[in-house]
Length: 222
Image (cartoon, rainbow, N blue to C red):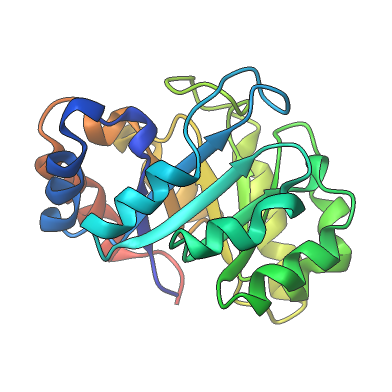
């Protein structure tokens, strides 16, 4: 199984965004996590398509776009045109989940589905074989800097068991409160795509990325 670090630019310094992105790439990060918030599905408002288009121009890292928005099906084509490589949509926000996932793939992107901490894994049973990635929120979506919810560990394990039972090697991404101190725990539970915001962008960005990757490169699953 491959492991990927996806630094969340929500925690970057936007006065020096290109420099921060260059730091994470130089240190070896493979993805950039891009949180889109609409002020409706979640309380906060972040950034949208124009910023993504600009980010695409300055990096060749995989753009991992997490849509925390109502009716995400409205914007799949636009985010594809702006350069997204992966789009994850919330189960709780999308009425036509299967159709929207299919549209993401039709546009040549990887398709992912996201669930909130209190949403049980079993709601995804019908789409497990239709996604490239499942994102488990390990904090309530909408704000950075929250503490990891301890019950998330068992939820990661349960989801990995569900995938294993179907013979699926689908990526499990985790987002929220992931730090160097709990990284090994979530890897052991079965996650292989790690979103980290403040733990990467606070302090020495390149050293923080290297510290994460050093743990991740050891892996836990064959």
